[in-house]
Image (cartoon, rainbow, N blue to C red; front, side):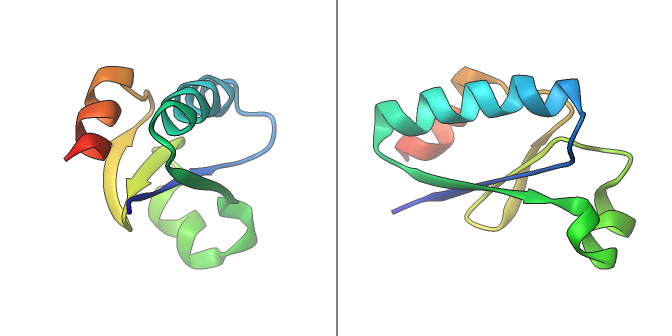
Length: 78
């Protein structure tokens, strides 16, 4: 079973867009997902602040800035 993580922060309009895509695809495929605020961890902030939103699939970076619905669906279907 795959797991998707969205790394973002409050007030980020691209994060809002990514959240919509992830929630749609995850619901269709029955995949769980979580959202993590990069401001909750200095390590996450230092690593990802210029790239948010960042999508991780099974802990591995999958996308950043924009989430491709087709690409995410393909990764979660494999």
